[in-house]
Image (tube, rainbow, N blue to C red; front, side, top):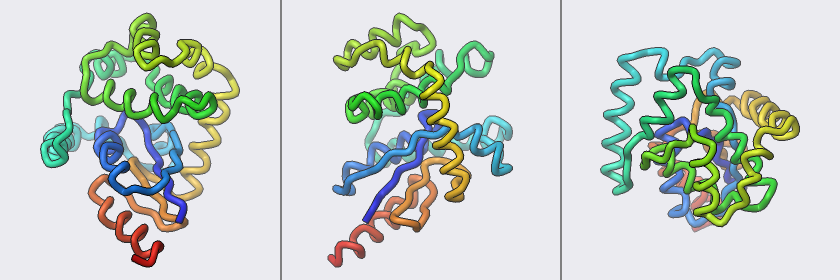
Length: 199
């Protein structure tokens, strides 16, 4: 069975789900998307557009992190810069595509999720971003590749694919054509995988 994980680094629930995916013991095909762009296309609203929802999601995500025994400390420098319009966070998801194309995604992906949701690494600073890659033994040219027209085009294609498949938020998982939304649906994903294996 083909298992696909549709994600954006801006979602705490995508971070939480990503910490659980290795436990499924099944190959995962990752589809990086710009969730804000996808939500706009399908008529959904992100949590920041609803202050009560935003407040609750922070509390809820903390509960899930405690349950999963994983660190949870949203990167304040990153989110403050985003709110002030001083940082284009699509750079992060574009970097994921660049990492896929340069065969470093397996290393880059969990580390960037942790940097966004469990560290104070100032990803808005270009020198700090270089240091981040160097700490992973990844060529710092990855950030430049992430800014190229080809990567931007691929992100747009990923977004279009997600919209076509019915994605309205992240994390979203597809077991073949069956869709599951949310980190709290991973038990359903596991059941679908188990059933496909005939266990």
